[in-house]
Length: 385
Image 1 (cartoon, rainbow, N blue to C red):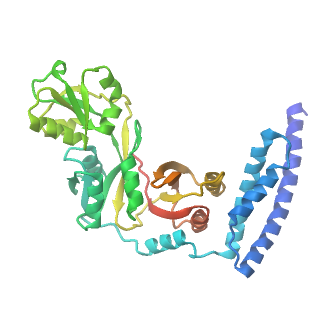
Image 2: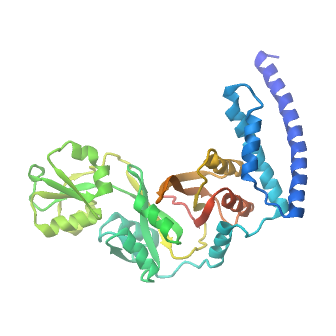
Image 3: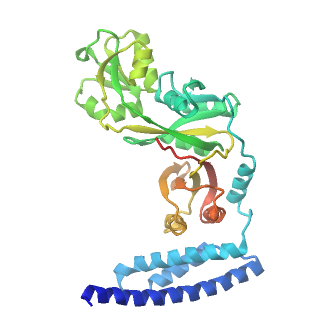
């Protein structure tokens, strides 16, 4: 037997002991669950768990192992909570969980021949996303501001909204996340659009004559390397990329240019002076389809949620451990500041799963206990390309 094989044998022996000890521990925590059930005690006692974890970490004098020991027992305790929850069958007493059940009970079927609203002028990338998700014959219209899009849903003027939430070059679109938090609406789908910006101006204009470049702030940021090479140009943010093309065309200003899509340039009669001016060749924007109520579409495999956390050490780690133990893929974690509560944040979470899958009910209930103000934004099919 080689030295390595001997080490592996020793590890197998220790692992066998660990499994037996783990089985014994689960027997005891099962009895704890029965005790809690008989006395109607909640499964989760977050303060108690923090105290226990601190004691476990203190069992080792090795400072390099303290964090690992805490992580080990945090995982074990999460498994124990899942075991106890199966015994206790906690219901809808948690406000966030109850709100989720209520929203789910009012879920509708997808709307046939829907009215769709997006932010921007015709020719914008949002319009392209709407046509991609609903089909080229979709009945869609633009609105000037992101807030106007949500108001159209609120006033019953549209059945769905298509909104950008993330770009591979510039990250999240913060205004949309803030509005998703403000309105109790649901995400029912998503779409991705490959973004290839071009520089466009009135016919006959050359780059030497340009003084001002218009585009949405995201478009300007995505093309900053191209623009940095021409420091004499003034950059002016607009409401959307297609709107910048429309503005340049309507102004008659031969010193102005727009960063927009080729489609928008042609739609508004502009000539393309340079193509693919965004620095990221794989520049892509992810859009979400928002509905006033939840829907249960076929093929759903992605869940979005939002919540707040106590402003204390380890609170986010507890959430992440929950997903690790349950074997759920965490796909995105976004935070936004909470007005009036300095250094506290609202978290947006995307993870793999189906709300109707076995065990998911327990996951959501535990999430609602660990976090505050949990809201399930939707369960939908992830974009596959």
